[in-house]
Image 1 (cartoon, rainbow, N blue to C red):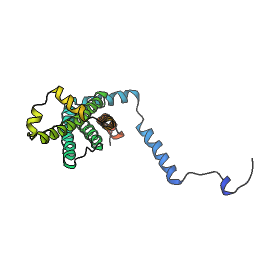
Image 2 (spheres, helix red, strand yellow; image 1 turned 90 degrees about the vertical axis):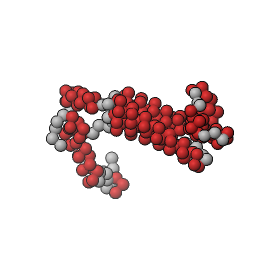
Image 3 (cartoon, helix red, strand yellow; image 1 turned 180 degrees about the vertical axis):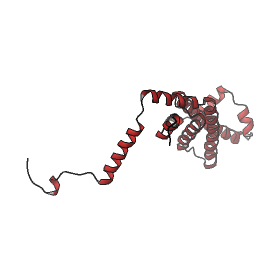
Image 4 (cartoon, rainbow, N blue to C red; image 1 turned 120 degrees about the horizontal axis):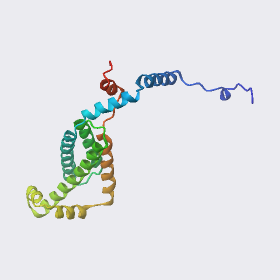
Length: 195
């Protein structure tokens, strides 16, 4: 081993701020440590706060609003802006989380399903608008005359491979953001600890 004390061979020290951050994280982790009984009690508290019906209602409203925005943007620009599907997934996920306060996986599944519904509805309204323009029929008449088989045909006639990517991202974000993110403050509240 060389005793060369050039700057390249000196031991590297962490910057003082990084050391303070690591100490702070360790202190927070120690203060946040829960016993198994506390963790179970807190999770029971969070499960009692969940509301699947409200999560579905909030998510459904967001899916319909997102579909309207996507269809409106497509009609206004003449282009289907695929990344708006991601926005629908994000919007639905946030809505399901706000309404449902869910920690169980079912909330993620609801968010994913409603995100897919919102994307499909947005596309269907766009296609219905195109049909109404081509045949000179009011949009409301076209929409009221659509049955599930016709909707499937309309959707499949306009389907592109890239739609899978955007629908997949919407489903992912719908699932991901539907689940509640628990913080140390949430656990303090659940356990009745002073904040």
